[in-house]
Image (tube, each protein chain N blue to C red):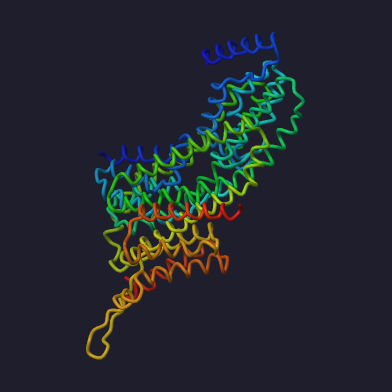
Length: 293
Length: 249
């Protein structure tokens, strides 16, 4: 804490010397921003709650920046209170909003004409779209590909599976959130609008969807287990139904089951709980009458 | 190791992963809770290969578990860490583990809801410090104030379930009839269809459906491993990207 204070004093002095010559461009050092980014990626969701979601998480992440920018107590009080409001986004991509906020607060501290409502509105306007991109890229693409590989290795009894997953995901998060935070700080609000509307983003998302879809297909074939025990005699030769099915189309029953589940989820808009219960019913019923096994 | 010590460790890990861990690590330790939990519990109980199988099996049910706006259909820390630990201590078959973990995960939502609701109190305390301009205490509220409720709703119940539940489960498995165990195992094979189905409906795009079938049949016919599919997919994706951007010009 004392070290932090010393730093703050040193940089404030630096800013003053700049002011003597010309108006300073930056008050915040790279280190201040780094601390803010680290606090965000580590503790943004530590006090997650239904009332404000990441509100407190955002406030604590920007708090060191505010302390430095607003040495006057009443300014600091107002600024901290403003950033305690409701806030919710995806951590990695949403780091950009924190970067932009730091830049805008700095502008304000430098005496530029930035209304506080601009900062609030920017946060509100961007948290949703960035969460949208973030949730779909992070969770439905990156997570799926990494999990797919990791589960495959793990079922073979290879302990590298979980380790690859942890390392891979953490590296992805570090790179994305660092890039997002600092590009947000540098380019300000314009950056996000550019990012969201570019055709580049569309073709990248499309490309990533391809990988995601192929991995999901592979996971479906590898992990859904449905086999039938039905057998009978055809003429005089015994027939095992599962063998016949395998010769027509391997993994036919898992594929059919997945189609059924998709029909419930997408076609009939049933909830996951409904499907889960139905799977239990199917599993138990068909197992008891020796159809599945 | 004695059961009390193991129970305390499992309870602490569950609590730590659920609410305390830096978010940057929670992406993998929480979202992949069962997978990582399998390894951790395997190490704790001294049977890593078995732990890995249990973890991977449970994880399959949660492939499609996507947190949109912070809500998840299940509590992955409890399903993953407590679920794996209970299974391993009772020597259940991995596919039967899935059933237990899924049930625990749904119960765990209660814990999650409790702490998400009650932590408002901490935020209001932080509001007061913010209004006084005390940034240090705002940070302290976030770091430590936030952990009081999770201790009560994660650590305590997990400890109780693990300490009293593990021996109980062990005895129960001895008296449960064979057909029931068989049925649990068959059902365990079906549940991944839900996880994968939810995922598929989340990324659903008719235009990209053929790629799903390419992946499916590469595994069904040729038994390719997923690493290969991911590499192949990346190449196809690159071709797609270049051709679609050429089309624009």
